[in-house]
Image 1 (cartoon, rainbow, N blue to C red):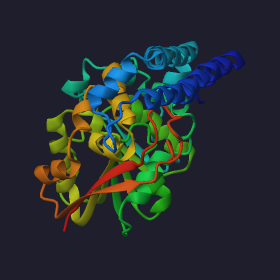
Image 2 (cartoon, rainbow, N blue to C red; image 1 turned 180 degrees about the horizontal axis):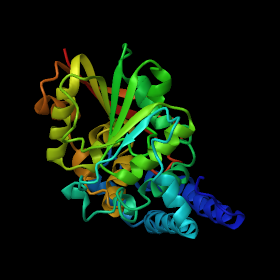
Image 3 (cartoon, rainbow, N blue to C red; image 1 turned 45 degrees about the horizontal axis):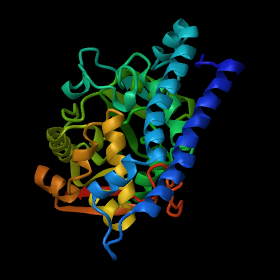
Length: 360
């Protein structure tokens, strides 16, 4: 059994998803037009953050987009919860059935594991119950597709990082903060002989990830763990990855995770994280508007660590946390916002940004 939808429920999901696409594409273009028409002229110098903020916070397009973003998310989450509530027992039975006979992967849960302190009073992306809420995996997966205008339906973000890590003969791969597995699954295809693991603190995300992997016939071994306290032996992996994890954690956790990644890496191993570029890069190489929009959505949509993380020098961050022998930033293709959308997407156009640490 999977979670099913009636015709009317699918129509409502399509409607709410269409509103999300409009918020990302239609309103985004209006905001870009307003910014270009009103930005101050400083020769070749770009406007400061405060100047962009002053320009945009008075714009009708931005004020409407900011209001609409939050309430549109609420509509999507409530629509999904209503669908699950109609078939609650069947949905619970489906999610709670794992490691069934014939499974190609596995799921190991730890009922004693508590959510990290910094997540207990937080609902990231305004998702009800956060990732550890009862239907966290369903809520996240059903929201993220329309939010990203269906440009990530084939796990494009996961593929962008997987294709960007140094090409080596990885035999054992670990994906930190794997969520519903969209960042994990590409490694099954790229490295078919490797043993693939994904960890997350949230059981509802892992249950959904396990269902997703099994439905695709992908052998992934998921386990419920904290990335700051991995339950793996020293020097037991060749590649450790983290996609869109670092912007959702406090500063001390960033260092702990890097230290754990270094510990479990074998000599010659690689640790790779991927996010959007730092604010400094956005401002200087892409658009100051992208910097402002990412900062403001983090503050508005309960992603409180975004302003801090995107202000960091990530090479310095990794070098300061663990004795990697080589640390560097790498621009990666971005199949979500593209390279030439001219501001049509809500956050503008920019590359993905990988930070890679190599262990000799």
